[in-house]
Length: 140
Image 1 (tube, rainbow, N blue to C red):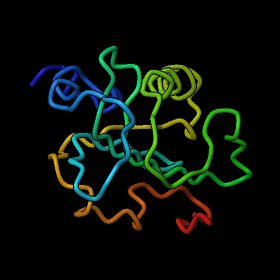
Image 2 (cartoon, one colour):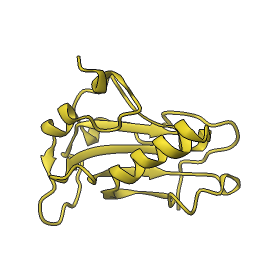
Image 3 (cartoon, rainbow, N blue to C red):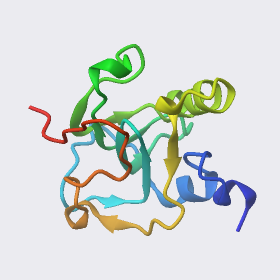
Image 4 (cartoon, helix red, strand yellow):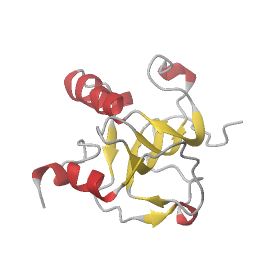
C-alpha cells in the first residue's frame, strides 16, 4: 500500500480517484450510486461517488453540521444533500488550518478501511465522529 493510501489526511489519493467515475454532465445522486470514498471530521461526513479529471472537486453526499459557536460559516455551510464537493479546498483546510494551525475544527480524515458500497447501504443518520457538545443531524 502506498504512503498516500496509508495517510488518512490525504483525502483522495490517486489510487482511489482512479476507481471513481468521472463527473459527467449534471450529476444527480441516488441511492444506487456507488460510494468510493468516505471523508469525515468534527463538522460532518462526505461520501464521494464521482471526481473531476483535475481531481479538484468531487460529487457526492455531504452532511455538514457545525455548531454556531464553532464559527465555520466562512469555510463550510451546513447541509445534508447531494452536491459538488471541493476536494482541493477541503485538502487546503486540512493542510493549513488543522496541520499547520492545529485547529481541531478542520480535522477531516479519510476512512482507510472504506470499501465501495451503494449509498442506500450507509446509515447517514449516525455521526462518524463526535465533537464535544451537542450535534444534531436533523438539519431542517
